Amino acid sequence: MLNSILFWVLSVVSIASAIGLITSKNAVYSVLLAVLNFFCIAGLYLSLQAEFLAITQIIVYAGAIMVLFLFVVMLLNLGNETPTAPKYHPAKGIAFILGLAFFAELVIAFRSFVNEGHQLAGQFDFGKVEPLGELLMRDYLFPFEMVSVVLLAALMGAMVIARKHN
Amino acid sequence: MDVTKDNLFMYLAVSAALFTIGCIGVLTRRNAIIVFMCIELMLNAVNLTLVTFSHLHNNATGSLFVFFVMVIAAAEAVVGLAIIIALFRNRQEVDINNVNIFKW
Image (cartoon, rainbow over all chains, first blue to last red; front, side, top):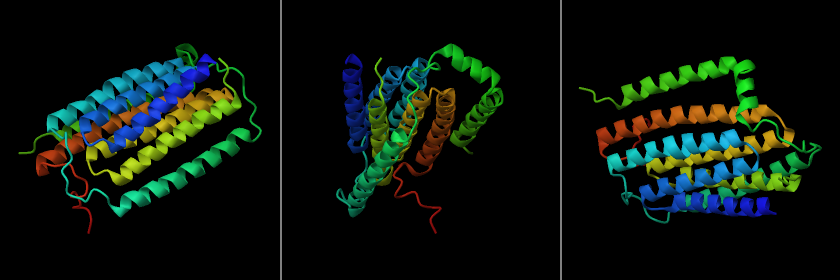
């Protein structure tokens, strides 16, 4: 009971904050609504018993990545969008209709996925740090190491791209 | 914790809604930073789907994949924001409708 109340609150807040993100005129509000959205998704992970991912979501997404976004928005002073295009463009209506169709398609696909035969396992053993870490260090050691190379490449790429060229 | 099948379907529906909202945002907004945040939103929706299916099958691969998606998203955010800063330095704006030098 408590779980389902928690689920409804989190899902409604996350969808509302996502809609606020794409409709807000001010980029700073968009970033803050995105942080709220990521916190709600972390709560949904928690209710799915994926504790490690919930913590990682808060630290990496809501903490690091969104602070980086906020930093760039405030650094470049991108608060308000410059009105170069008309406010009501037919492309927006088309995007909305296509989005609704896409949503219906996804829901139908998920419905059949969930219904077709897969028995609910009943428990979830891989939410904690220990089993995930064991798997990461045993079966997925090579991808884990490769990801560090990707991070290093991204770090160096960002420095090269954002550098001032003389 | 009473997570039933219908309940799990609702998680998937929420992630579908978030993905769709992100998609609409990418298609309609012109501020490069907001488009970029919508991409992050879509990545998060997919992560939620992966965790839900991981829970449904009691399989760790989905959860581990979410971990890798997060790392790649962090790398992508760093490079993308560097590109936005370089763009702003050259043109004093980040409106993607006006950044079309690759368009013939």
